[in-house]
Image (cartoon, rainbow, N blue to C red):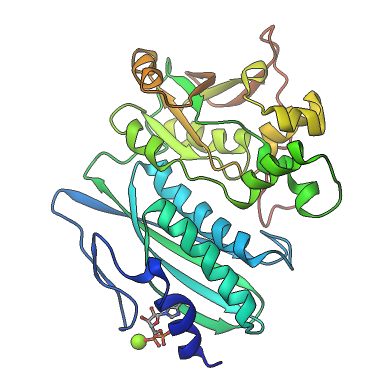
Length: 321
Ligand code: ADP
Ligand code: MG
């Protein structure tokens, strides 16, 4: 199968590649053309997933199709942008119809769930890697950045923490467990649900937001620096799933919730006066701490003692001490 046949059969023909709102021209020309109405800004983000680094190789291509798009769309959710389009740069060592078919099916399913149209990409031969660029729209000036948190705000997350990182021994086949534990944890890893609607609901309400991809404490550090504030996380307020607690026990579940990556839930700072309205709308919001004057991120126990761990999350290229 040649490059053009591959693009045509598996990507251009996919239901998610048939255009949509904001797509003036999709796959097939030298560029796609995207329309942004006056008064709105284009939000753009790129994510690369490399085999053996960001996902195990081999793995189920259907699940990889879902996950590769979900992690990219999550960045749009974190800005309060409405996703509408994406491109896919695919590097493949070999071309097999079964693999492509399953990958495209997973991709298509997530694309339709997120409301995004595939508008272009690139197809090359080499070690397996996937690069997604996602496009969203947001009314000018309303994007949720990392830099607006203020002392007195509450620090919140949009869902349970640690499930995806806790699932890693299951993903890698190093451990097994009963279906009631395995199924929800693997679902969090392979098909994270970008919190698009929560991001939209937080426009004009949250002062700062991001999605948790590198681990809670590490990502809190990004908001603290960008906003010029200190963040305090209360260990006993971390939302942990029953499946994670049953699989790892409380101490290890807390550890992965604090330092494991791949959660893709939103982390945000909101003034206390705006919280109850959001909760009344039914959003799954958990208050996990507070924003203070100062700098840095601290973890405290129920007595307020500082129990901040030294190592905070995953970083590529980090020097070993
Ligand atoms: P060019 O050589 O002009 O960069 P290509 O031959 O790489 O174009 O791609 C032809 C068309 O197919 C373009 O519209 C491109 O965006 C699209 N395309 C290529 N690979 C993919 C892919 N993996 N998924 C979706 N669209 C793709
Ligand atoms: Mg060209």
